[in-house]
Image 1 (tube, rainbow, N blue to C red):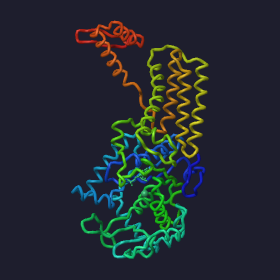
Image 2 (spheres, rainbow, N blue to C red):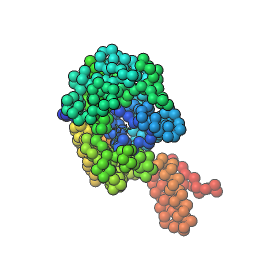
Image 3 (tube, protein in one colour):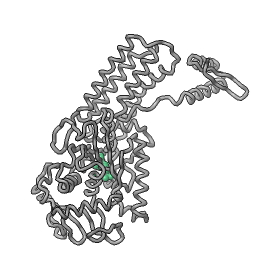
Image 4 (cartoon, rainbow, N blue to C red):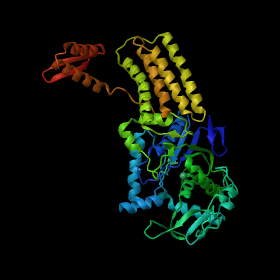
Length: 466
Ligand code: AMP
Ligand code: ZN
């Protein structure tokens, strides 16, 4: 399996530290609002990568944090007259609603930054002791000059980076590129006791600390949206590697933005659509299809038309599922034939092609076209004359390949009971309308499926034929 590693700017063979196991950390949301479909892309992409790794037999320890203390949280809590803690609790609950709605699998662990304050303080203290960080009036800064490899992720050297920074004379830090890992408390802000008075952690240190604590000094995959590569991930590397002297993450994966009219979708530009509002109108399958229909490293221009076309595409795929489900529901006594067995074996070529595409840096766009080819093949070759077993086996394969993408897992039918109740209702209506032909047809179709209707004084009852 090959993955594109931002650190080396190359596609590399994926080799986890421990064979068969993957330690994966994804930077999660700041929980002060509903997440938008741009954030949603990042969550869906890395959920898909996690699902695919599991599909390929890896056990994945998947960690995605909640940033529940920062300037935006404090501002919003003040504006609403609530506490940062209450705001975090509320939007974490809302996050789960939307993430579940998008078929995002629950992480192995979802740590909250505020649960790690003591460990973060230990991390900061250790960096000061090692000479990588310094304290000024309760603020602690990381000294970028001390970390010789600073800039390796973004491919910039410190001099170039410095040249691009406007020197702010009010800053107390020694060097313009130094960044805060601990911030002294301002009045009215949540703060914690620490060796430097009272304060709160900087954003970058939270991820370094939580990743190390839950997954260990070196992890396999660290991921996030492409805006996080610099400075967030660059700073995480500096802090973590300065502390442990070991590589922090072997593979760095970044997903590209969702844009609106070629501008990044963001809360600050106010050009966003929340996942929630889109989920009200479109199914999770449709939204995931849209987000996965392009490669994850290519920007996606979001529009209503794209959603509509994703909806039409999903309908085509689900029509295939529906045909198979209809065949499976027929009461059919036919045995699977030799040529049908051969046909099913032959379908494994789609599995091979799907894996080949996904093994190539998770090329979901091409993997989806393999799914279309598979459905087309099935639609042409499995017909009313086929056996139930061949339809079942084909449907299993469709669902198997849909699983890593988080689509095609639903049934197009309700339960058998719901379906029959609905048909009985249709028949009653037909009788009321004196459409005897339709009423008889419904009764006969059900009979052909082994369902017998009985008209009783209490209404219509049904039972399975003996
Ligand atoms: P935030 O809540 O802003 O910290 O963002 C949570 C995650 O969503 C991060 O990994 C961001 O990189 C990612 N993200 C934010 N905006 C977008 C966007 N327009 N498109 C794709 N990912 C985004
Ligand atoms: Zn992070």
